[in-house]
Length: 567
Image (cartoon, rainbow, N blue to C red):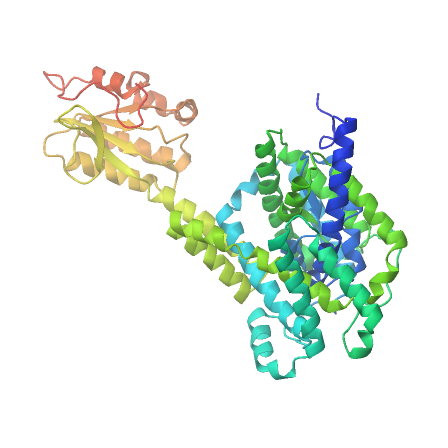
């Protein structure tokens, strides 16, 4: 039996511990500046970024199943949080921090509730297309939101397009020293990644900025710095469960929940598949829920499974959650002994670091690949990005999910139907299921290429009746290729029963081929087996055609299975 805890750690070997500890040191060097930067997206005090790399990491390492997934602050959930709280309290205020803690607690509760109901499958409802579009939109939104800060302009607007318009109008008021600091950080981080991508360039930028700020008195030159930071480990905090606040923040927590489930599952799956590891998505829900609960109790904000941070630790040689525990230990040391130098850190440095993260979120290559392979999904991805930028993060993710589901249902509704015929060489081919199409005199083999349910059952019935009514010769046998139909719901069963009645009145017998076991069970459940006749349900098309006898003669059709058939 697998252990309930430490699945992402066990088994432990001496060589593995050494390797993972070194990877954890590298992750800390790369991730501490990035975590500080995420507080600018979330609207939280700087120190809370370090808190996300402490207890939440330990909670997921203890209770999750993924050996690679890094659960900490993330740009997507930080943007959702800020979008939901910015109108409720002043950014980084005590009230704002309390509301952020309540969102983390509610999100953790949703994740644990999802585990109780084994809802790990919900991750499948945010497709890769939606994620690419959503994160691209977040990249533009965050990048535009930080332009004013990087230019030394106070931009009170909250909506992305209004922020862009205001920055454009006030370009003449740019604070040049602030612009130079921001530009230097962007050049160091982005340029450094091109030259030596394995080095922790954000850390280089932060250390360099702190040293320069202390030596050159940036604060005296009008460049805003972080100021004194209360060091030490986080204090235990219980969010106020005020019913009014809970009700108000549930939509924000729900959006965070959906993003965490989808992004974390996609990331964990990718690395598990790459290394051939077992993955328990429902167990990961426990780890993610516990990580967010501990985030709430330690005074910080929502955490998420991060693809970029997971890639960091994997590329550094980490092969288990021991690397993440090492990172948490390093962060604890920073909190205890190294927060004093951070008071000299220019706030614009954090904004510039996050700007470089935002640039990385704009997935041009992913959009290009989607456009090449599926133009309709490309439009969905772009539409998601546009809604995120133009309307908001929560609205973007919810609309994207809705459009993706509608697109899926639309495909099922407009199911591919075909009549199978044999060519001169005896090979089967699918032809359009249009009036007058037949397989042979007296026989129609109808292929239905989707699930049969309440929305498309009427179209199926209409197609079957039209093919029989308008055939050039009387039809005696209608063969349904049901390989794509796994079951029928109540409405579809009623429609199928009505079709059977119509066919019987016309002297037509319905045969069913390739019915999966689940469809046969569904037929039995709805009482259709007796009406169709067990003898009329066949494993293969070959068997069905062999059983057919037109009045006085065998139909002129071959015995080979058609496209997709199992002969």
